[in-house]
Image (cartoon, rainbow, N blue to C red; front, side):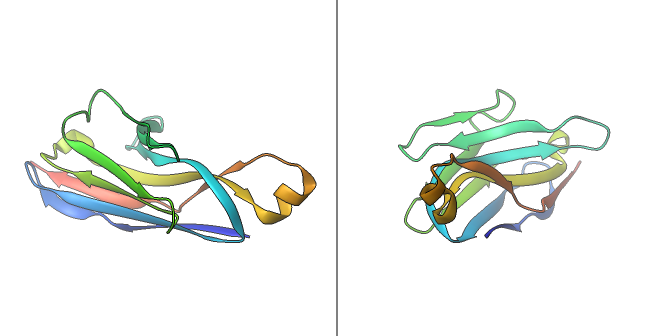
Length: 125
């Protein structure tokens, strides 16, 4: 019923910038939080940034001041602008949305989390 798809990513040198975008589509009533996680090889998935529907944002300490999350509620999209990239930012980046679909709304259910397939970001030194 819902699709979440990332775009962007790629290979960049240290100090460079990349932008990730994510779009959710389907029978969506509302999206609460949207955000980004990342997972580097051999490491656990970690939260990078979150943006709520009301405009609250939060970031992992490791990316504060370098990454900026933004979302468009009307378009069901979220983006992550990544500046001053470091080799340690290399990971697969996953977009997520806490989505309430129309069918679940009618059943009185709550939102559930949907994930994108991931986008590779590689930062070379």
